[in-house]
Image (cartoon, rainbow, N blue to C red; front, side, top):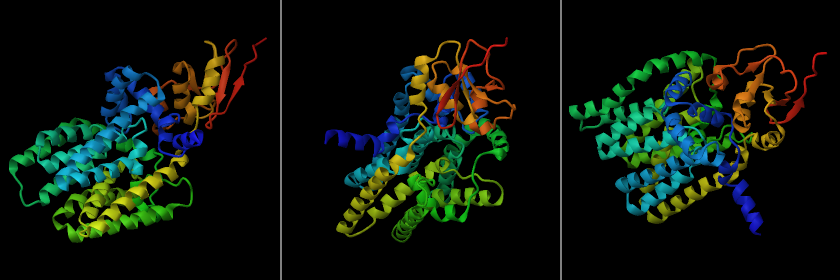
Length: 433
């Protein structure tokens, strides 16, 4: 009985996210953050995102080293920080008891909970969004300025979250010149990074992003809320249904909470209109995790809509049903977020490899995980006999610029040839006679 319960908790709940191995983007984060701070910033200029998360991760690595679960704790701390600030904001906007519901709704949200266990900047991104909104509502401009600047230097798309609050303030009836000056300080603080964003945007034309289609458009709100991206297949109807439910909450909020309309509708729909519109007309720009700030506003819109239900028994029923719904979704989706296990085969390789042996990956896809889990990352290369250019978006050339090899090394060393599914074989080059 105990073993069955433990197995369920480890492999059928979001705790699975914590114990499973790192994947390519997480390994990329580690290698981006590992060098000195000046090199971290220089490397970031060749990536898509600003440097704040990598700087914080740099110091976290000094504390935990190259330990999978230890690296994930940093994102979990940001997620828990978001839960706490959500509680503070909900206590300000609603009530003490309702604030606990809002905090739980934030904690169990499938999108935020997933990235709360990933070695990437998205949990920090969501946390700083909540902080910025909290200080904006409280009119604590120093906190707003700091959280906005930190958010802008965490992810380029944070500019849309910040810009949405500027628009909301512009639509309000109590505008003051001195507050406009405070509100614009983060933008001027971010100006030095704008040229880097422009260069990154130009380089992104050869990216991996998939085109936007009607299926995504009609399910986009549910996609952002649940982090469902097509696995398991055939469940886009589910996110379409969740999108419809979110729309119903928003309609109720529009009717009952007139003074709060802009606080939710501007940061949810204006960025989506811009991103989806540009993706349809010019080139794809939509990635749900890039827009994780919209998930935060969806959470508060739903919570606010439930709070405005006048009959207590209906309000309490909606609170229970919504929490049970997202917890059920968390349990259902967790096993489908399984990542390729490079950790297990490299435990075997590390046990038998000597100092002359090297790792070759069959494609650039598996190079970063292989480098993370092999004892010596500097002996991990991409087998590239045709010397084909490696796309920048894979990230290999940013942290390992000299990673390609067109032939296996001579004896006495051996080569462990690893494919994208983490299977490997040993290649022993025959000596020249």
